[in-house]
Image (cartoon, rainbow, N blue to C red; front, side, top):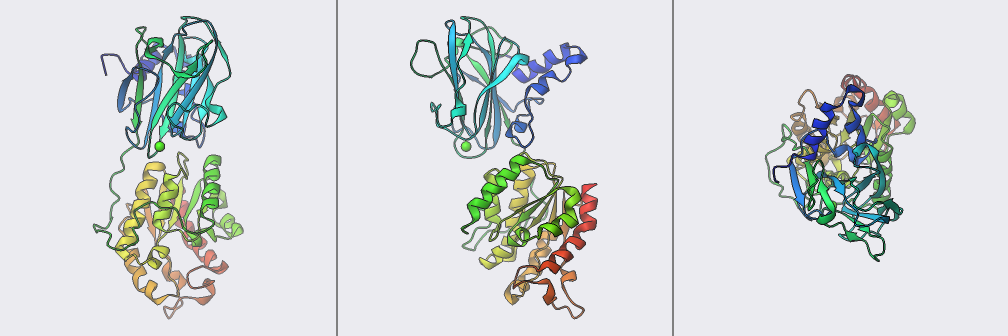
Length: 415
Ligand SMILES: [Ca+2]
């Protein structure tokens, strides 16, 4: 980048020059809507990178997991009605001001999912209504953009009056925010926070055929429907406690979940059959992204044992899920449940080893481990039959035990 100050810094310089009445005008100018990826535009902080673009099209395939903003001014070549189009990978929003001031900007187009470079018609929202602009007047423009994984880019085109196709806005009609000299516009990039390694992660290599650390969709027929349902719950963003896991989590009777955690507005993100790698796939696919629950109750592992993963591998899978959670919901505490006992002797022989690994991940603060398996046993150390519905699933009474045994720690973590 050249000597130009980054837009973020300029925003803050302008901010400082304002009287306190306008103190939060700039921050408010980015819509931090609830459950919205726009939260990831950390415009109050200096970007990690600023790239000078010679047209309103960013380079493609730059990185994974970042957010970006391209802002500056456009200078229409003639007076008339303009249609704007935005295309991006993944999501984006396009704002245009009625003046040169960011404060006057309005949302004019958006892309809810990825579209190829130059494709402005995958979603109807990608194109604006016709907007009347004056020749050579300076208008503030801003595109914000989110990339999760895979391909990435953001581009803005316009349909100039009299022309037949939307073309990418050329550098000659652009200037950076706070500058008049035309020829380019600046893209600011904020990379997702890097998560330090989770304490207690087993230092092993996966040797089993089933890799618990590699995101793959679940194989059960209800996986995609439930994943979609969880994305809707993510969008609603109205929960303080999230139960994340497999069928043992999805099997929570609604009334009991309400009884034991109702005051914390619970949400059930369990999907039957899930292993650690399936939950990773769901999180990569946007579940919980940019929500802000206070606690996630995480129970996973028994289906990995069924797939032949050894205890260290199961724990490595769980640790990978936690790492992902720390990136997606960095302020959320994790209540990590020890894997419950089963009626399967081969599983039961390995579950204490899995739990010994998981216990080491407890950092006393953001990650707390809870092993309630002793409460599932009778005085003779045998699994209480009335707590189980079948070999691995809890009966109603089993959920009562889970709810009661977790209540104290959940209260403490939600303080
Ligand atoms: Ca992508």
